[in-house]
Image (cartoon, rainbow, N blue to C red; front, side, top):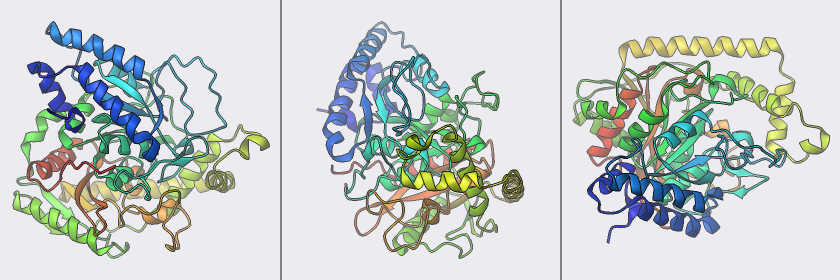
Length: 466
């Protein structure tokens, strides 16, 4: 008998269409998996089983009558607990927020999923206010890696990544302000996409401003394209949302990579120390892109690490999030968050504007770079997952999470689409990710290249052992 938790969203929809199984079957299987993994992995803030089964039953009836409600009718999905979902609190991993409602509004991406008939399994874990690249919070504790629970799942969308990796729903909504979709997707061995800024509307607006993106976390690129077709439409609540995409991201998948100009930067010109196992896996995947017909050149985008500018923007955003808190409430914060809030509060308006200048210069640099190259390929991360419950790897010398994720946050500054694709494992069996980056508004190229790697068997849908 088919294990429904092993199927992608595309496969589930095909099964519904053929009558092989129903949305109730798929939802029940996903909920059972979620309940089984929760004690060890801690991926969920809250499961909404009764609501999910009721929505699944309604979907099943629509499929029986030949009138599905939308592109994702009956597909189980999860939502990171940064995004509003009506009917329950969104506490963002913080003890400083109250459960008192009313919780009667959906974030734009959640609203689009609801309109298309998706089945909400529940909310997934996040560090407090999504502030760091691992997932632990004062409110909900530590989220662990599904491959090895002694390791971190990454963050800040760590619960979403762990849930998808373990079959608790094939689709998840994550958010990404400096790598928060791509980091946990890479650590957990799934696909994650940070779309072009504004492609997926966000409401309420993030205090981290235009660094913050909403993106799909899925088992493969085809599912991500389908999810982006659903959530990537304008919403009047987000003044910065883009106009509708010119075509379907699913339709563009089949175009492949033949003739694309690919720049391969293994270490940002020697600026990043990449572990040998990571470097080897990424290089093999790049060679496969060349074998599929892409024109590959080893070259670098030639920019200096913008981490200081990123910190100014990130830390001031965190300070703004917590500005209203009194002394007692501040004591409830994650100590690391409390530190960066204090650092952000010391930045001046001139410091902020200087960081914006760096950001604009980087954007111009990458715009020029993509006049020559369709895609940039890098490792997603220079390392694999480290010990759970720590912000940085032991003995690394890093002070903050940005020290070990230098390939991700530059592309939040530039607002470019960037995705991570699983391309192998290290000697401990821990997943390795390859990052694909394209010019702004060319999400289709990122998805095409990722899909080509899945079709070629370089990227795989793997099920961890937990």
